[in-house]
Length: 264
Image 1 (tube, rainbow, N blue to C red):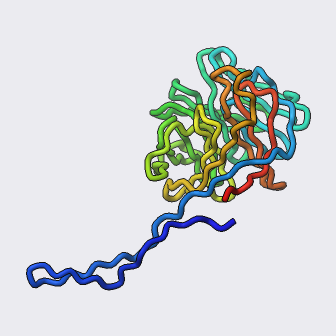
Image 2 (image 1 turned 30 degrees about the vertical axis):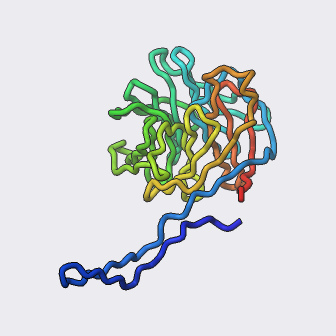
């Protein structure tokens, strides 16, 4: 399918004569292309802990790393994809509500919701190595290989230095209007994928401009009538070696490998 584009007129030379003075108007650039729209096919379904209030998800070295939320129940986990078995678990102190995670080198970085505090763990042992602060709420977190990308529930995505955790920049996500409630994040092939909280949708974002490049409609993946209002889609992981995309949700009993299908 070809990408839809807006049709723009290039005004090479338009003379407006006002009071005897001629003005030359030039339009030098095409408008932003319209975002792609996708549905999905389920390639495979895997068991997922239905008690896991999924807040962050990463796939690396053949296993899943998962952050779960809720006060008194927040954890960091290493999970076997094929069985859903928890291979390793670290429980956060009860006063923290776990949020997004990402991996940078040999460390796992985890956010918390309203405590303005993040944690850094050794990837292998889950030993807590460091704590850091940030001024906003913590929602989603991913990494482009050089810097962290963080959401806070608004339309703003912030870029952080992965060693000092100082802010290095930000973008405002938009598709004609601001796109808010950006939640769990994943960096995939040069683009940012983000769950929209309380919607069965994932948005694809240009990390340079914040422009929305695509919308993924995941309606029908879970039976809405048989799930709690808080059990929303939330969790995106990407297997870069095998080019596999995984999604799940809070307290979902399954994790899905999906293939994106462009819509006309």
